[in-house]
Image (cartoon, helix red, strand yellow):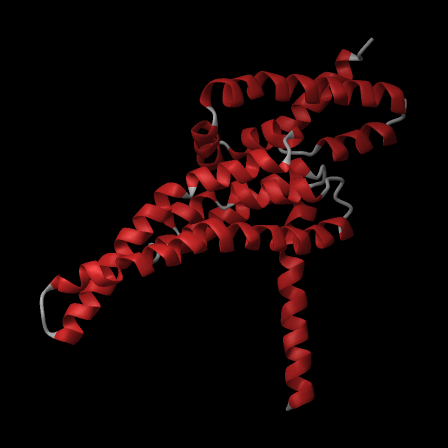
Length: 242
């Protein structure tokens, strides 16, 4: 029988933002038996996921995930914890349609305006180059961006393992996909893109902590470590070439 006191402790800890892994370690240090800790943890995971999963995947779907990615990321990452790569990839491809259309239209108008200035005429160049612009963004949104997410997920996964993250590659991939939602829609707006980038960073901390079962501090360190490594390598190369 599940120990209700442990369940209450785990639920309260999760509400405060602590990962199950950290809470389980605390209980183990407190002298509780591993078996009853695992039973309580499984009970908490099954109930928290099943109740929300019905709401998002059953009734709301992809656009429900989109809203959760913006406003309730903790819920989204908990719901998608047992999800595979394909649902996340499908989500990315579907939500990319709207920004693809917006970026394409803006690109067409901008290129046509530039051509009209160079030719000294009205926007007559509109019909001559729009296919190239559309093709550029089509490749960017539906080929380059998805491949880039896969590559970055693989690189980031190595650093997550350094900080003892318990998830696999698919968990890392899901974190990148769902965290990129704000950037897809608002990343092109000056000034706003800084806030969007910061929000994506926060989303990734939440996602890593939940999907890989470690603390937010370790998630933060896992995110900044690659940048620190790159800065050190660049500095070393600079010193060697100076």
